[in-house]
Amino acid sequence: MNPDAVADVSRVHHGGSSDTSLLDFSANTNPERPRGVAGVYESAYAASANYPGDDYCDYRTAAGEYLGCEPLHVVPAAGGIAALRLAFEVTLDADDEALLPAPSFGEYAREVRLQGVDPTFVAHDDLLTTDPAGYDVVVACNPNNPTGDASPHDDLLAYAERCRAAGTVLIVDEAFLDFTDQPTLAGEPGVVVVRSLTKIFGLPGLRAGLAVATGDLRERLDTARPAWGLSTPAAAVGAYCLRQTTFVAETRDRVRSERQRMREALTPAFDIHPSEAPFLLLDVGDRDVDRVIDRARRAEIVLRDATTFRRLDSHVRVAVRRPHENDRLIDALLQA
Image 1 (cartoon, rainbow, N blue to C red):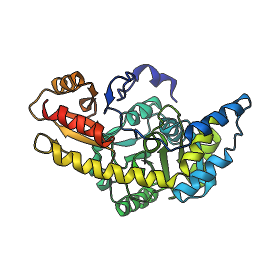
Image 2: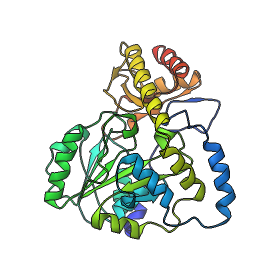
Image 3: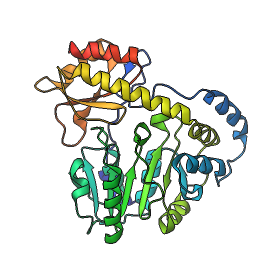
């Protein structure tokens, strides 16, 4: 991190409500969790009187099995954002060049700026048509947040090859890839894949994630990661969750079905962006975004104000939750 850059960087707005009396559609996390998580957490709590083993062998093994990559290529981190910071810290110097998609996750720009780099932005759906030469790092979000569209795997592979030829590191945020049938880029040379257990397993407070890389990139990530960077409960629960493949498949099917049902119900009232993620981006048109959000809140529903994303000025983002909760959202939005 560049100390001189810190004073000029602000916090990023995110969704999520701490008011449990409200139905939260602003955070795009799974409302369900795998059975047995509480028991694993409780057992891990008993072991928390000691430092965790810093090799995180079981966590790496579970992640490697889940992603189909070498466990030694997995670098544990306390959530996806911690993995992103680590990736930028080992790939960027002050005044380097970074190319970021827009609209997309606001933490990319914040973390890049903390390294002393002023990022360049490109429309998210044009990213893979750009020339990576001249950039030290390019970031892709797949599926993209907040739009929800995913890039074809073959297109990403071809772009990764172009990045390797240009000597550019490609960082791919796959926080929502679990909700698709698309394979990961984990293990692809010259690529840092960032994953989070927050979204698919519905555990944002656990703070468990990882980065995957090969060769010198992996060595730098593993050397620079904080010692004991993943708590004992996070490592134990994370390893357990990564082995719950039936839960993942059932979640994927539910989200796909409900997302389509929500789209069909809301299309007469909103322009909806194509999505393969557990959320939908709605253009409210001539309606005032604040008014739409306020009216939903009166129905005890929280929406994500998507105008905080770069290049969006008339949008809200809504998560895909359980069927009966989605029914409440549909009713509230059609009256907004």
